[in-house]
Length: 80
Image (cartoon, rainbow, N blue to C red; front, side, top):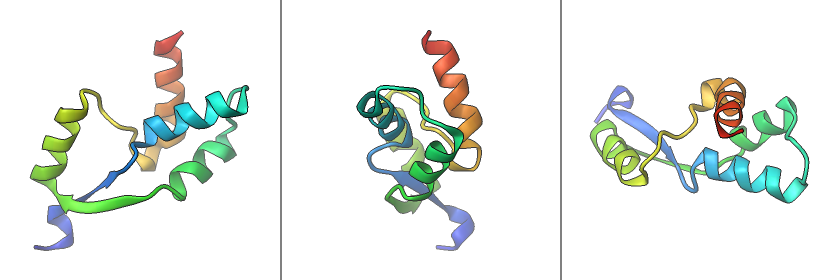
């Protein structure tokens, strides 16, 4: 299997990590904090097919680490 056939799945999901971190902090996360959390998150490499099945089983789309700040802001705007 080549790298192009693999995808990172974060466990716990980036969205869960960010929600927990913000709730624990008690105030909104800064961009720097979000980037740090996403950069330090643990993930596993799985086939793209397996990643799609895992995402479907979660019932929501996780945050893309390459656009984590923008996607976090979008999530927060939809939640309010």
